[in-house]
Image (tube, rainbow, N blue to C red; front, side, top):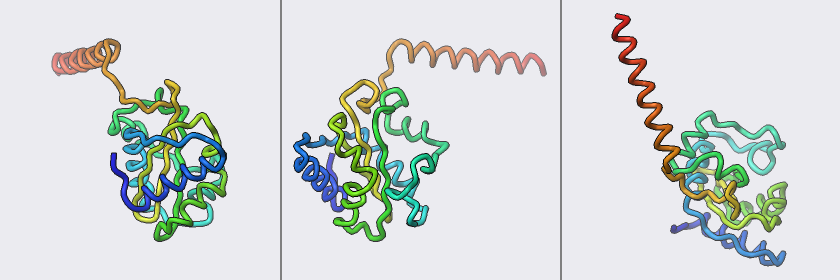
Length: 173
């Protein structure tokens, strides 16, 4: 994964901040990066105010009804992302020093100070930059969704169920 510009500056700044606290560096996670990019795209049309991003009051964060679709687009599911943390910030012009401060000197610093987080993804769009933190636990690893036997059976079951209803509706006509 290659991160350019403000994203690379933020990645380096966050790891320098964590090093100053004697914490391990966060490693880049492609799947978290994908989700961060998708979420940044969702935020891009929202204005920066003193109640958005790092200034958001917990519990008032925007909810995205298409969140499951964003996870699917990044080959993720809710079960391997629930221990992660999504942190959006809005900074006009994405000035690097201000962006970093919005993470290290806000409520988000609690997450950055937590040793349970081991990975990071960063996405930006317009004035928004989103950091997604991952863990090394099954519930926060952001590993790609795999298609095991259970998924295959549930997908086949859905297809048969759909065909049953389609055929049934034809006979009703």
